[in-house]
Image 1 (tube, rainbow, N blue to C red):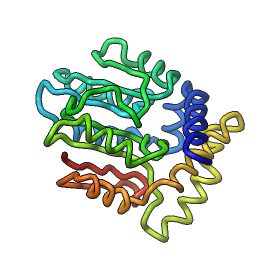
Image 2 (image 1 turned 45 degrees about the horizontal axis):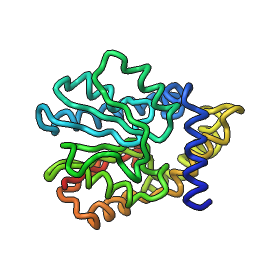
Image 3 (image 1 turned 30 degrees about the vertical axis):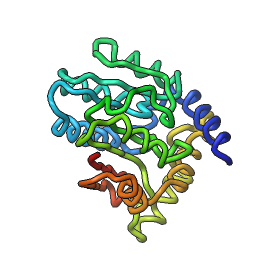
Image 4 (image 1 turned 180 degrees about the horizontal axis):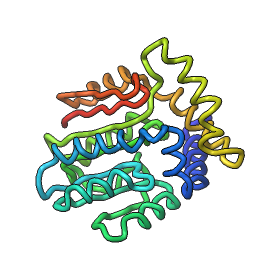
Length: 231
């Protein structure tokens, strides 16, 4: 599919699965996605300056923003997503927290240059139609010396893990996550990972875009990886 078709399809996917998204993520990750996200939140909370601003791109149902807001009450936090249905779930979960939610496309963030001390995207980059453009937008809105964080699913580098990975994520995960009703949506989550950059390729893209002090941390033999870089 072309970029326009992908954008429309991905939007439809998340508009459809929003009510069961969190529970399904726990099922298909065998409960591990919470710890992966928590590691990201802990890292941001440790590294972001006091009384600064944070942006959560492709925020979905808001876990990263919400957990960070609970951990660091001094921060000004914004979350953006192009799915209004997913944002509505985030709003419901964050009633008592000071978070600004906005419906927006990651390809054109509605913020001025150098607005945030840190910007993150969690399990969202692979669903966008232009990885480089999204990262450029994230770099644009982060301040000098601010960090860019990306947490996402990858095809594992380890060759002996790949057959087991494929069996689970191609054949078991769509039924486990979506059942018959949302089967095609969860097949897409497998396909989007297959089409996504390899870990090394994303690191090279960070370098190409001028990010420094690049670090990466892998979980489950590279099934999930967090990559960060400094502007």
